[in-house]
Length: 220
Picture 1 (tube, rainbow, N blue to C red):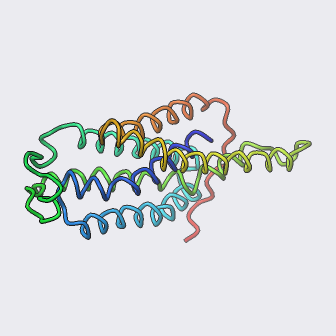
Picture 2 (picture 1 turned 60 degrees about the vertical axis):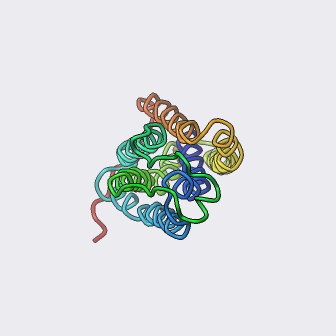
Picture 3 (picture 1 turned 60 degrees about the horizontal axis):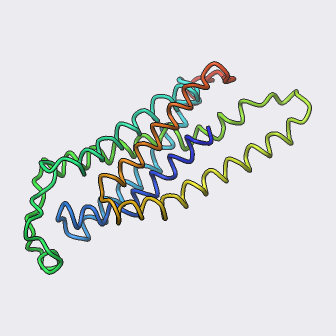
């Protein structure tokens, strides 16, 4: 549970920091257009939490909501890594120096290349729907309120949970940016995908141990 939240925060902040520059420098989109696309990603990522919380409480339960959407998140990150790794998915980079980039003289990305990138980005954004509203409450479900020391253990869980949130953000703003600068975009996005894949594996390994709260039906 801690790993899942840490990987989600790492991916969310890692993409918010790097994606504008990727679209501008690699996809040769205008800076304003690149910033707008990332704003759309951030907005969908936040707003989708309402959908995930509704599905978890009403129909799927928290476990299955997390399982479905965290897999979607991983697929989106893999698709972004592929976008940065396969030359055919980006416009030609030859002759596109800093001056040409500032003058807008670089060959822009083809519509289908941008469609692939944006699809991958928005699949990633929708993946947050099952993680952000569900992981903390699913963690709280693991504690039996009738057991001795319930409040102490719950307090410890939330302390560690928000430590995981902070560590994920720190990793995004430091390690991921460093990897991008030293080893390129594919390595940076691949690091995010690797972190999410590892956290997903750990989450599914713990499946036999979890306590589940049954969904309560649609509040509508």
